[in-house]
Length: 206
Image (cartoon, rainbow, N blue to C red; front, side, top):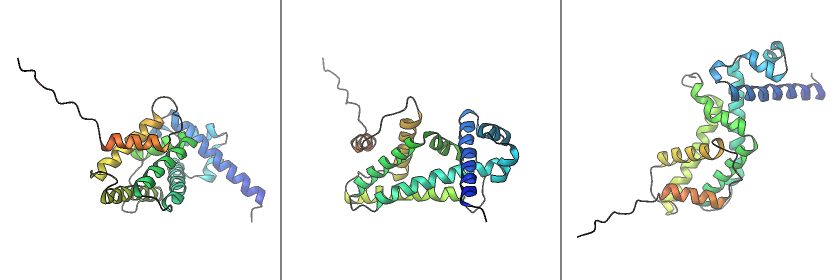
């Protein structure tokens, strides 16, 4: 049975491998990354790398599980609050934003990597289950908010796509953003729910 020290050393090596993998994935398209690349960046030999992960896909899966699981855990306390659907929805988005800011490299990878993942057949991978649960919660809050009149009636799926694009732009395009407040998120949502319309052009009668 491994000692406490051995367990800590193993966890340290595992974390270093995942950290090194993120650095490599940030520089190279995931389909071109090799285990040798990850081993070199992590500071370990291939033998050590294969002791912890049997393939590049296993490393990718571990990163995706970690990212989505952490997102789910961080919003659980928010969902238990006795606030209105709209306020919970805004607080969830703010909490997700704060989590992204803590580890931008992980979440940039998380939002881009699934497009390059192979099919897993009928059984969805573990990370996908967290993703679906998060999406279902947000959609449920939208539905409840529309039913109570807090949100205007819109297509929830289109709204989720709009919010996804909004977050991607805020956190992964351009310079690093400042911390986003609830008021700013509400203002952005209002812009999505109620986009400005072009003023009606009037033709002057001569």
